[in-house]
Image (cartoon, rainbow, N blue to C red; front, side, top):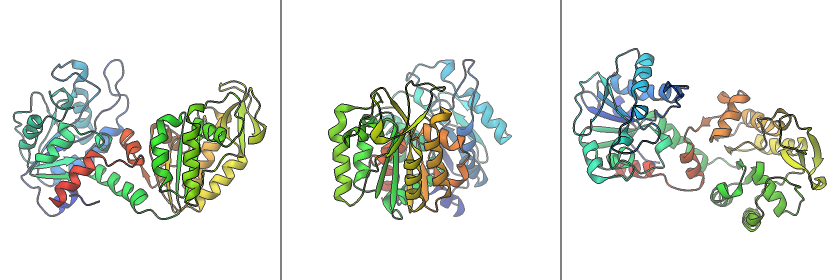
Length: 397
């Protein structure tokens, strides 16, 4: 992907004295008292802000927080606690400015935080009037919020359209590089793991990947639907019988390319969905009518692990079993350990996937962990994200 990197602008001395507008992702979780409960996103935003300050820029930063109503300020929507925490982490005073759309006064070497951008009327619909006002505030726009890259809003797309210079910050650039490496020009074999409770939520992803990957590993409720499509009894397990034709179509599409969707040969079952349920390992052909499939079995885990160990590129979205319950966590752990040990380039994304990565302590062994959520899923669906599109247009235009 061709795009302007903010780091390159800084290295070439093109940022000193310039007004820099950074769209960050500071949408942190808040407790009932309004205090920040987890500050990872704030910490992740600091390198870009510091990069701009070190380069001698006058820095403006904004972000959304929650889902406010445009034009209706409520204290719960304020970035006040974010400004406070950002100031603590950067060890400097960071003023929070309200009603900033028509002008911001900030000197080179200083940084201000601009109040919740989703309070601005026209933000979500990417109003041209608002976008042009935002662009007029700066000399350089920096998009550093991958979690919003799939939304064409005034502070993510419109401003990039009209700003003098539109660039990708270090976080967004890293995502763009990793996605291109994993999907646009992957080292083969390319293995994708797509898991979750329902085929319906991942059907477009499965269809898109079926035309590109060499192995498509399915897990969770999705695997149950594929087992049913393969003619296996899944008992009372979660599945979507109405999507059997879609599952068979994915299997056939893979088969036509000489690729495969590995169907579990053994599973871990229980009679009830509970953490203390008795776990029973069974051949996939021996599932009883009152069984719940809650994990893949050890033979299937070993077979899939071997495929991952020989992969060139791995894309991982979703645990393959109910890993929150210890008795049904071994499949996901086996997959995680294999990815960690593999020499493949690995990229992972999605909330449950990140939780599994944290549980098994393999953060340093996964080459790239995407923080994008919905944006990551849309990439897997084969969509071009609005942020990627406009930054590429501005780079060549």
